[in-house]
Length: 135
Image (cartoon, rainbow, N blue to C red; front, side):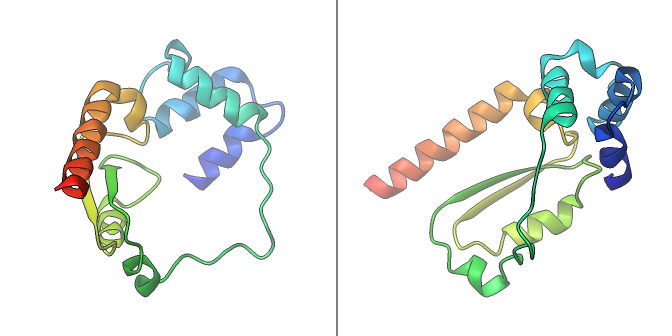
């Protein structure tokens, strides 16, 4: 994943090759540039410049995660090449008020693949949080 990501942001990378790399990251779609999400991500890969603080911040520990008291919804792509879905879910479950779902069929482009399902799930989660806080 890192090699593909780095390769896709190199200056002068031909658009066709960047598009193929993006398609692979996004679950193997044939032509990422035919999708609005693919064009948006390709633009970010081409034009966005990132800088990191030195040294990089450490990941929060288990105790720190357990101390977070706000409800969290984690919808994790099961077919992502970016992360291990089971490890991500296990780490997220250390939050006290977490709702964690692995969507086995989703790639790292989960928001573009399932926008309606994602919106429905977020709305249902927020409605449940609101009801819990009111009740």
